[in-house]
Image (cartoon, rainbow, N blue to C red; front, side, top):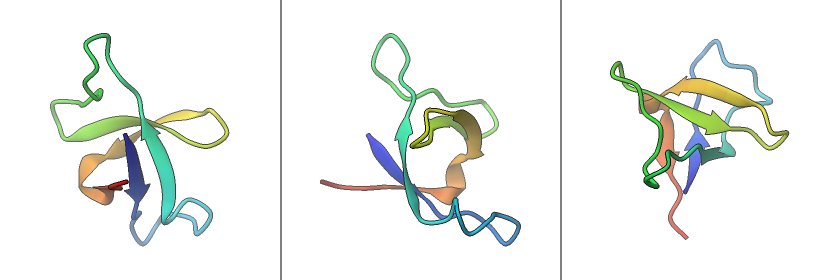
Length: 60
């Protein structure tokens, strides 16, 4: 599952509107926090926690 990261006004332009892959749990669902955050993986392999409201699912 891929998501587009919209970012906010404090986000650097390098990270805005880029595609991110969701990190999956063992049962295949995305890792989400109780406060609406989501764990995603960037192109370089780094994993970060991002606010879920700023992510948009990319349909293929």
